Length: 535
Image 1 (cartoon, rainbow, N blue to C red):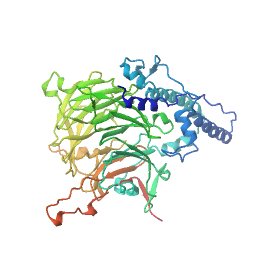
Image 2: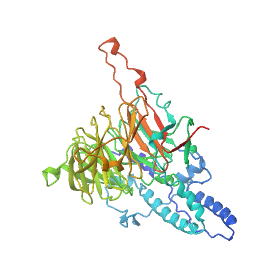
Image 3: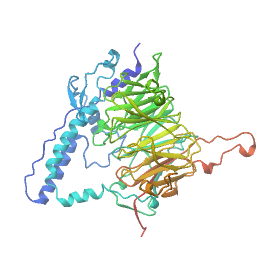
Image 4: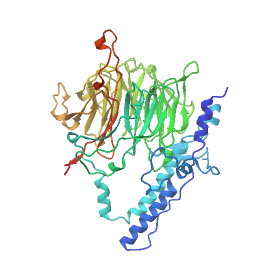
């Protein structure tokens, strides 16, 4: 019997337009700097139209239905360039990716135009963009370069944190709804949220926040409205962005999610369409839902956590073909990890190393290509709910449910605890934390509605016997549990999400209702950089 999900995924993926773009280096005719600048701007605009989006159309929003965008994403109905299945594509690390890997017969027809087109489109476009950049960089003055660098290095001042805007009306439309985290996109143009109404929402970054060096006290932007809503079939377990996502390349704008009793879905972040699915099957050939997701830094592999098992899919090969790592089959009993794999993180500096957190309070460190276990880290008093590598790849930070400790492990000396920090966690739900791009600050929410920040450079000040790091600063962000924390990768902007389930007791009249002042479900954006006075 034909799987209806096969046809749905195939109809979405087969509509992707993958025509190559013309990106020849530009020749500037005049030697005058002003005339060259005008020629350069004109050429860039023409190039960007051929590429994917016109740079002058900066008001382009996620979810807008326009003929131009529809033609870019899906072609004009008469053109469709297929990719040679026997072609070889060079990977970022220099490996060779062969796209004609053997797969099952049922999956060949299903996902014939899969996300492999994303990789093909992304790599060819990046190569041409580099050629274009090399040609134009010679014509760029040093003053222009200095101006660009001004916005690439941001100084974080969390003690100056002021609210910029928020989104709460969207979550008031449904009663008894609470948020379950938020995540900035890799290019920083939008933020993704999850809530227990089985819906993923995408909010665009307000245009007023782009390239801001400081923020004026008292300035509040209008409330955020979702640009896109994606409805899953059940409770969403986990979700994440494609790591090479860029709004300049619509084919790379996608995200994955896993929900109860459903396969892993790859969604288009512009249209909300289902591009394809990654399906895992149990011993009785039933679809099994993953509990956690994580891409490799290059986006080539998708790591999925199950009970006692990790399955690894090739991003360009949807369907059921995957590699299985049975964590209970380790030759050393002391390194066998059991239980549901609740979270996975891949080392950004050493992509072959990844860590899996389990609800059995253990952290397993593994290395590819065959998933060899390196060590098993123990020390938490609650099931692991979130783990994250520092951007430099030298530290691993982990946190658990109903566990007040966030532990920082030294990856250079496995098993060594650099320090721990204390936060307020009295709930079983996942409590996110995040690390700034410079690997300096660790930020986490608390059940009491506050946000705590720790300066990891203060590790030299902690006691060697009890390495507990004191907070650098703490501020009140919400009236309810702060379960979502996400730091913008380009600007000093912090996103927080709040909410938790409130159960009223019916034993007495006084306990029959819950204090509404303690309930808050919303998304907030905070400026954590330089602040100027209102005058």
